[in-house]
Length: 107
Image (cartoon, rainbow, N blue to C red; front, side):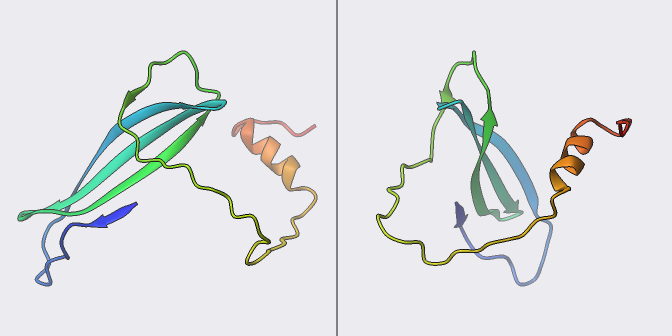
């Protein structure tokens, strides 16, 4: 979510960005970490951005903070558009090598 609190000053100026975690919530097989970024200048807040990150496999934690997430009903119809992308068959192999780090050896 992007919220414009007030427009940027046309004269320019220095903008400060402050980030904070606003919530941590259990979601299925992991957790949802919600973040807030606040852009401000000398006159006060300009923009507020709320975003989330899914942490796969997160467990053994206590929920905290607020949530901005909402359940969205999936429409019962065909999609508006379909995109098909052909990828190279060796891409999964490259991905596996990259996950092993810079010192991975090819076998």
